[in-house]
Image 1 (cartoon, rainbow, N blue to C red):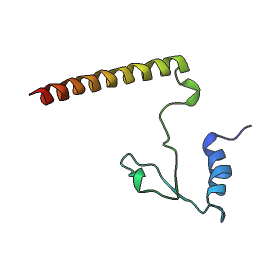
Image 2: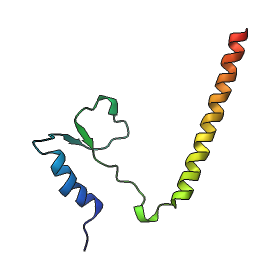
Image 3: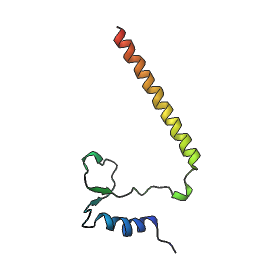
Image 4: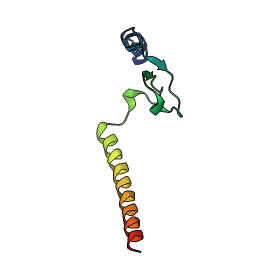
Length: 89
């Protein structure tokens, strides 16, 4: 029987991060975590609701990401148009 990903992380990765060589502090994930203030910290993974084996195919995920990015580009182009209009006035 193979160990779970969580057990592997705790047993193999966290022990190395806590070693005297690295001496990182392992902290739990929080939605409001201010990651910009962290220095030598490792953030525990958020235990998601989805089983990694039941995730959508990579093509579906990448398609969704591209759709989201295109929407962002469209919004940025609208902002640039507004900026140009303001500069012309």
